[in-house]
Amino acid sequence: MKAWQVTSNGEPADVMRLTQCPEPPVRPGHLQVRVRAVALNFPDVLMARGQYQVRPDLPFTPGVEVCGDVLEVGEGVQGFAVGDRVVGTAAVPDGGLAQVCLMPAAGAFAAPPSLSDAEASALTIGYQTAYVGLVRRAALQAGETLLVHAAAGGVGLAAVQVGKALGARVVAVVGNAAKGEVARLAGADVVVDRSGGDLVAALKEAVGRAGADVVFDPVGGPAFDASTKVIAFEGRIVIVGFASGTIPSPALSHALVKNYSLLGLHWGLYLQRDHAVAADAHARLSEWAAAGVIKPHVSQQVPFEAATSALTRLGAGESTGRIVVLGA
Image 1 (cartoon, rainbow, N blue to C red):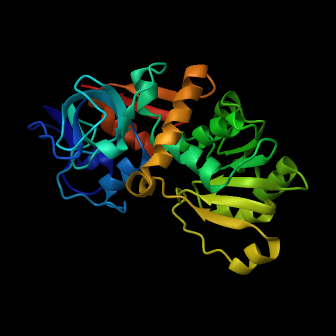
Image 2: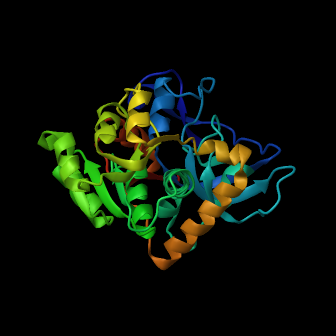
Image 3: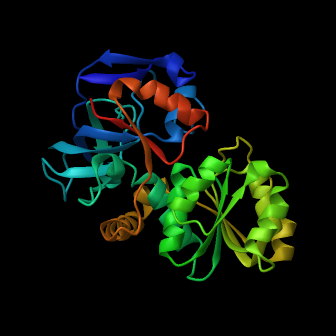
C-alpha cells in the first residue's frame, strides 16, 4: 500500500517520504480501516518534529483523525462490522496518511451519514474536545458569554459552533480579518482581531463589564494572560493546549481573589477512562450535524500526494478550519 512515513524528526516537508509498505495487520481491540479522508491536526506536525508527548519509533505514519471503511475487525471488538463507515482516531505508528490504517475500537464511532467523508473526518478530535470542554468541564449555559481563542482554527471553530448550539453569546479571537470572516460565518457574535493592538482593551469592550463566563483556550501564552483580565465572577477557563508554544504559569492567588476556575482538558483520556463521555458527545454532535446545527469547516481538500505541503501550511498557522487529505 501507499503510505507517508516520517523517517527522521523535523519539518514534515523535510522528513516525510511516500513509500510502499505492507498493510498493517489488525490487532486485538482494533479495526483495520480503508482510509477515505484524513483531517490534519497540529499533533501530526508536532509528531513529525519530535515535539509531541507521544513519540512513536521511526519510521511511522502520521494522521490521527480519519474517516474510512472497516476492512477487518480485531479480536475482542464489538459493535462494528466489515463495511461500516467510521470516524475516529488512528493508531500511530499505523496512522491515517496511508491507504489502510489501524483504529483503536475505543476511538472509533459511526460516521454521520449527513456529512461527507471530508467533513466526517474532522468531527472527532476538535468537536469532541469542544463539546466535552464546554459541556462537561465548563458547564456552559444558554445566555452566558463564551470567549474562544484561535477561533478560526479547527478546534476553535468547533468551539464557536458548539457554543452557539448551546445558546451562548460567542466572542471569537482571531489573527487577521480573513480569519474573522470565517469565525463570523461559523456563528460568532463578536470578532476580535488580536493583531489590531491592545488585546485586553478589545476583549473588555467585547465581553462587557460582567466579563466572559467561559474561556476556551487552545493557545496559552499571551492569550491566557489576557483571559485572566476579562474573566467573570465564577468564570471558567478551559485549558485545551498551548499552540503559542508558551505554557502559562498562572498566579493562583489571582484565581482566588477573582473567584474563577482553571479547568484542564485532555480529551483523549476519556477514551481510556470514561468512554461513555466520548460516546455521548459523538451522539449529540451527530444529531446536531443531521439538523445542520454544526458542520465542520473544510477549507481545503488536497490529494494524497500533497500531504506534506498541507502539513507545512498547518504548521505555519496559515490555514483556517480543517485541511483534509483525501484517500489514495
